[in-house]
Length: 225
Image 1 (spheres, rainbow, N blue to C red):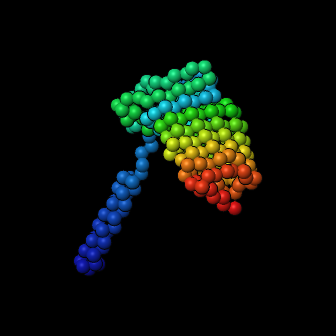
Image 2 (cartoon, one colour):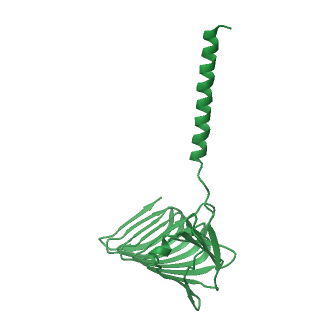
Image 3 (cartoon, one colour):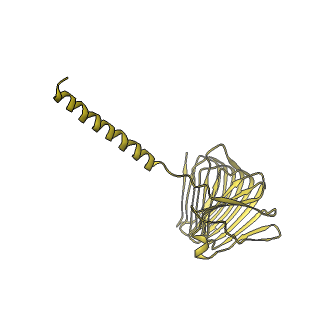
């Protein structure tokens, strides 16, 4: 074999090896590292949650037992998450900035079929949450309700005021809505809608059935059929 051919083959082999090595390094660097840093706290039975200026992320989902799962930032050690239970009420109050910076989010599992959430200057997400009856009160607060399976809520009774926001893609049988100077969006079917919108509120509902939703002149209501 000529020296020129041997030299060419050597160069091509080196280039190929360099490309493969670079690809392997890129894949290794691009693979995200899973953070499973968490611990669980059992709580007494409750059917009412009060969140007043709660300064960390909270997720709620249907579960087999009453429990708070605290997900921490990578490398953080187990912390003492303060909460109070009074009768049937679970209270989540604000914590120090030092403590909240260690928390990714808190996951709340609930087996109860009837629940009430009251939020003041707070935020909560519902993920794959099913319930017979749910009551929500929002004051300068926000709720996101995400359904990835066939989750639904039989009855939602919700009061929204003071520039609060509610978003959902969960199906409902019955909605009783009272909204003032806030926004409500539901991108899933609702069999029956009743209530009232006032003070520049915005309401958007996909696939409503029976509707009896009153509004004042400053509010906007849109039904998408």
